[in-house]
Image (cartoon, rainbow, N blue to C red; front, side):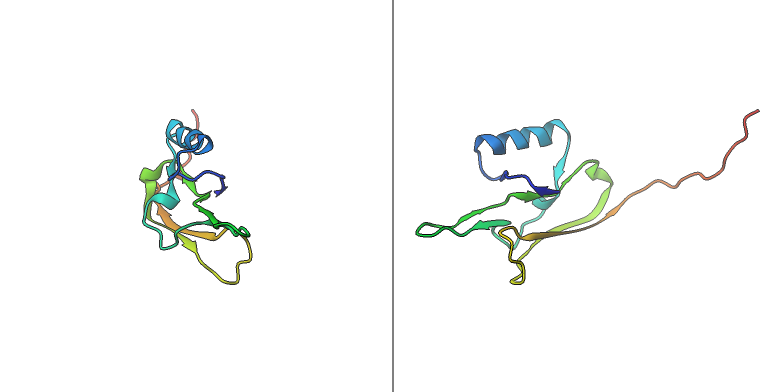
Length: 106
């Protein structure tokens, strides 16, 4: 989880490297599973030019098949003074029951 400085919707060299890493390691970008209400997770306000906006903050997960009810939202909070918006994630994980019986060795 964090600031990857890569936007999966762009095609610059760093973005492509991160996308390849995600594919090679069977990761799932949790924040891209649903449509976000916010149009960016990072905003750099530039003087005399257009603002720079991007989706740079991501949550990557492995074994996505064990995740139930995934939700990730970019939070637009006026109290947040950072140039990055906060992400909230909620999910449940499917787990197998643990056998707590211990067998003695013969």
